[in-house]
Image (cartoon, rainbow, N blue to C red; front, top):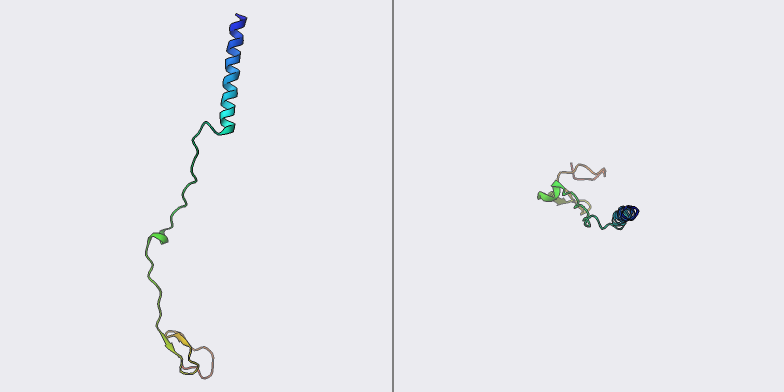
Length: 79
């Protein structure tokens, strides 16, 4: 009876050691991939480009937006 008990205890200890080693080494679960980053809704929808009409300033020659207001100069033609 003593010999059978030694075999049973050895089996339990071996099982515990094997289970612990598998968990430490990561053998019990398959490797997991990193989760994919969530897709943004803006990336899936096409955005219309923002384009404004421009015109050349008659005083300084710089192209400015046609919808812009006065720049603050005394001789600014915008307005």
